[in-house]
Length: 264
Image (cartoon, rainbow, N blue to C red):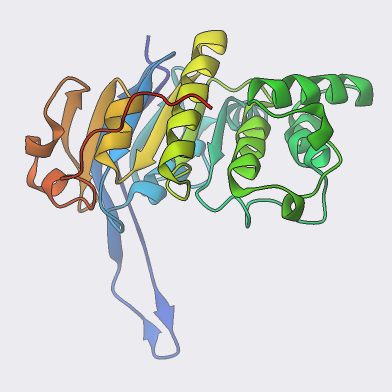
């Protein structure tokens, strides 16, 4: 069963300046992908190839100029307000810059509970119980509840953002370079944590990255993107450095594989 599919999705932007309209700039070109429940897939490509634009399409934040995006058998173009809200609940995204993704004045509890207020009908006590459960799920203590973003580390804040994404019990979470700002040891620990969460919940992950090693460590399937198109698809057993010329140009393509999961 397919969770989320795109069929010949193309998209671009019309730019304007003080001198008038600029030429239309295509970003995505006939994208065809299929994501499945309980899988980890990677969207691999250089900066500027259209990965983040595609992520916004998959979340329903933008409607493609051409083609169709189908979530659980329903096209996003034909969704009514209630169906679109359900899609926003079922597909969440975690961004690379966790600092700018949260309000520094809010507590960790308030940050995690934000989607629970707008996407669920939970009571205040139910929201707090769910928040504590989520903190434990991402490996953070209850003592974090009343702390604010400036009072915790970058790795802890990224875990808070992941907990917030998990709050509404989504079926798919898109990690848009969400592990790129972390050091190697933290990346390894986060990968281990995400695999455990998937084992517990059956959630699907889409990792958007330019790091081949990270994709091979975490994902079962790799999609290589180049110049707005999907250039190649392979499973994790493939030698990704030889998949496509675009993969060879990635910054980390020649580095050794990630080491085994470290213990504290």
